[in-house]
Each structure stands twice: as structure tokens, then as C-alpha cells.
Image 1 (tube, rainbow, N blue to C red):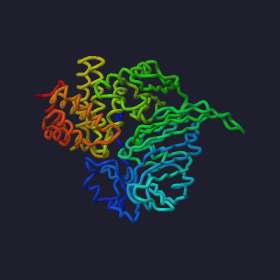
Image 2 (image 1 turned 60 degrees about the vertical axis):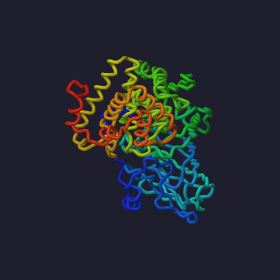
Image 3 (image 1 turned 45 degrees about the vertical axis):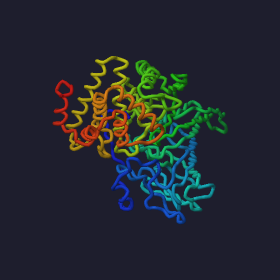
Image 4 (image 1 turned 180 degrees about the horizontal axis):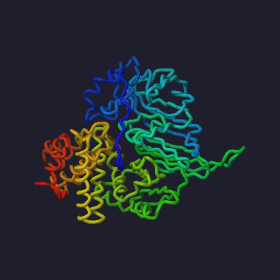
Length: 504
């Protein structure tokens, strides 16, 4: 994510009772090598189904995600009232596999009114509290069994003014969906943590004057004439076959100019832009194929079928987000460095996703350093050095902030995921690592990181281990000093001179 003067408003604290139940799991945090299997509240007995956990085990956000099952595929069918910013009718069909015997299970869902729920075709009962939708199937689900949940709902998702978790944005002329670390749970029921990636089929019906773009490949568009006073409509189907973390799922419904062209290596380039987008912004976005080609050289093959951009009306979102295969921009965020940043995220953050939100520097440090690498490739060494000096200045400024006391790159706390200590500090760490191990080892590290963990999840400990493997060096002290020692103003001053160059 690339944000302007942003601070994360923390997702509301977990319920005390749940925290006590999950205490043993949360005290130790998520294992650095844990797989994408939700964490149950207690070890289930095979012959005795129990409720799945109401959280996946993230130390920062205990209620993000859910335990007891692995979501495999979401089929979302939404009939939208774009002008009203609401959902006339929606059906979410979720295919999943149980990882324990389940007497009940949860989805994250802060969405509108529920009309009915079935599990494997049988009506189920449910309750909702604190953003948790708890479903009790008519028949318990066996450990290892595949099952299908269908949730029908309608209404206008609430817009709470918090751009990091609002998720649903309606302007009167458009609807778009963005939010990090959460937000998808406002418009569909979901296992809302990056550890549980899934594939998607998304169907949107809108009045005929609107376009809809979303993640993946556009499979079809169907037109229906209006009858009995109802407007003519178009129905768009988007297929996303790549595993996707829920915060990276998006759609944009608006009056858009949409184009799809063949890009480098057979990647489809999608542009979904407002008709009045300034020419200067168009020229910036037109560099997408060139940036893609450069980063394929540095990071390895592009991991998805499409790469596109969509631009919203100016809103309080005031940022860009690396939504998978279709990058989302507020108009204020269309800048060349930002475009490079978000394209780099397709490898680092989207294909290779974090295991726990504490490790967000793996996403943001790598994407911010990619801005430097793009400047170096496109504009030369002087431009790269200028980009590095901007990171030094950003780190110095952030270290003097009232909330920066004792903040570290590798464990910034849930309120500071989007701090410049994480972004700029992470970029400077990578530049220092590049100089320490040399260009050959450094770029082998980035390519191997993207290849080894493609479509999966990884943690800081995995990155350190791979860096040592590739370089043949012991880097424990290097990473500890960068990641887990606070970047105080004094330490930044010791590290960098007033001219913005490293102090030997």
C-alpha cells in the first residue's frame, strides 16, 4: 500500500472472553513456519466436533480470520444499486474444507442484513456479534470434509470513515472496495486473514451505463433489456484463479473507459479509467508494461494473468492499494513512484503474502525499495540516490514523531503498520543488505523469494534464512539490529549524515 500522511486506526480490540480462550495460542504468536491452517481454540477430538476458532491466531489482530476450515473458493453474485451505494441482493457461495470436526464455524462479516444461510443445502442457524458471524450447521461437519456455505444478504454496507477498514466506498456515481488490513468483510462473509487465500468468481449486475472491473480475467458480459419500469442492466463475470488474500479482493463499478491489451509475456494489461482522467496521469499509467518488464528481470516471472489499473474519484481513501492484478488508485495517488511500488507488490505482498501482520515490512519495505530500483533503471544512478535520500529523510522524520518511541521495523505494533519507519526503514534495510552481500546475491535472493513462496505465505524468519542461504553469510546480527532495535532520532543521526549519506 502507498499512502499519503496516513495512520492506521486499529481494528477494535478482541472480546475479553475470546482473548482468554485464545491466550495460549496468542501468547506465543503465530509460528514463523506455520502453514495456512487456521488455529483452533482447543485440540478437537476426532469423534466430537467442536466450534471453530473466531480468530486465525494473528497476534496483532486476534479476530481476523477464523479457525477450523480452509476456504477454497468464493462465488460472489451481487446485484448493485450504484447510485444508492447499496446491494439489492447478494449471494456468497463459499466452498471450504474442514480442518477439524465442526459443530459451528465463523466468518468475518460486518455486512448488511442476512436473508438466509444454508450449509450443504440445509438451513443453518446463525448469530452475529462484533463482526463475527457464527454459523451452526444442521449436521456437524466431519474433520477433512468438504462443505459449501451459501449466505444471502442485502443492504448498504456501513461506511465508518476509517479508510483502512471501511472496505466499501460509495460516491453516488461509483462503488469501489478497498481496505487493509481488513475491509472485505464489510461486503461479503470471509475468512479474512492472508493465511487463508482462496480463488474467486465474482458476478456483478449493474445498470447498463456502468462498467465493472475486478480481480482476474473478465469471463463474460451479458446485456438485459429493462422491463416493467426497471432499467436495462449488464452483468459482468470475473474469474480469478490465483490464490488471493481477502484484503486484495476488489471491484470498481462506475462509468469507466475500459481497455484490455496484450502486454509483455502474454500478460493482459487492463485499464479502467474515468473518462476525464488528466493526460499527465494517463502518461504515468502508460508506463505499466515498461515497469512490468523491468521488474520481471529483477524479480522473476510476473505471477498473475492480468495487470491493470483502476482510478477512483477523489475520496478520503487518498491512497493506492496493490489489489491483486488490478491496482486501485485514488486520483491523488497517481504518481510514477507509486505505480512502481504497487506493481512490485504483485510479487511481494500479493503472490508472496505475510503470515502475520507484524511482518508487514516484507511487503512495504520491498515495494518501497522497488521505487528506488525503478528510478535506477529508468532514470539513472542520480535518480536512485535521490530516491534513497528521500527514504533517509522519511525515516528521520518518522523517528521524531511522538508515537515513534521504541518502534521497530520488524514489530511496529498494530497501530503503526503504515509508519514510515516500516516503509522507509524497510527500504533502507534492503539497500544496506544489497551492499553487504553484493548485487548478484541480492537479486538472486529476491528472485528466489518470489519463486519459493509463490502464491503462499512467509515470515521474516524465512527471509533471513533465505538471505543467509543465498549469500553464505551469517546475517543474524545484521537483521536484529535493523529490525528489532528502535530507530530513535539519535540512532538515525548516527547512521546518516546531514547530507543524507550513510556514516561509515
